[in-house]
Length: 374
Image 1 (cartoon, one colour):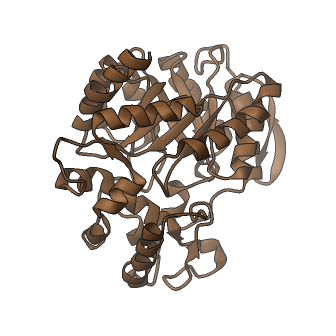
Image 2 (spheres, rainbow, N blue to C red):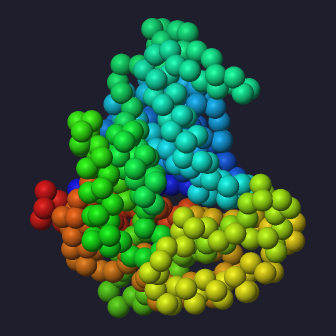
């Protein structure tokens, strides 16, 4: 099992990365959400200078944020700074789309974006649509060291539904997924991984899998709704509510009264407690957002902090339901069951101000896990 951490990209992440590397973390992923955090490419470039072995991933790039050759050159430059340590994730748009009031990118657009990016990073000529016209393009100086075209950057596709899994299995080097409406379930996760791998096998791709979730080591006699756990896991809980109730500007005047439930995250079979909480959140929070540009208020604090009006929704039940929280021994066993189900890498979100949790998890979970299971 590989262990990773993810950051809402910010410079404070750099302070904990050297120690995380010493503790055995394999990878750090950085969110690509301009409306929420710092520029991930700047942070990743600096991260290459404070780490030696840890892989660094963009998790995940969204097509509508930049043209594919711009993304490819940025990743190719990082690959010069840290050869064989750079990873690239692609997604249709979760926070990066919803936080600016837009829909996720269609899968067909993502596929085209991925193919152009991959070819450009390899120094190949490829057809790219520019201003509505598809034309042949390539990096003009791939042999001058401006980008690294020798060391292949693995490309992951973020998927939580069948179409995404299909795209990942047919095109990607790895699957990047997340568990947002329940504690990670080995059976459900294993089925998704198996489907992606079955599609990838004919291509000769082993299809490593990454799960993004929220994890916290619960102290002895610490209540599940302690201030520490509420502050640390709380942003993961509210992320679910933010995404259940999304506003899409393309549907016309996107106001507080024209919300759309995100089918991507409104999965069938969610717990009655979560469904009840989501309905209450809609009545108390969504319907009291500003009429104009409601997404600005809606996503304030996303993956970072809990707004005061959201505090009542951070209950012990929801913390336990949505995050992997428990004593170290319990987390070790849960992670092992996920590994047995086929998971290659577990990644958990580091909330700003809680960087010390990286050290705690490394000492209390990673070290004993590897002593037990290698």
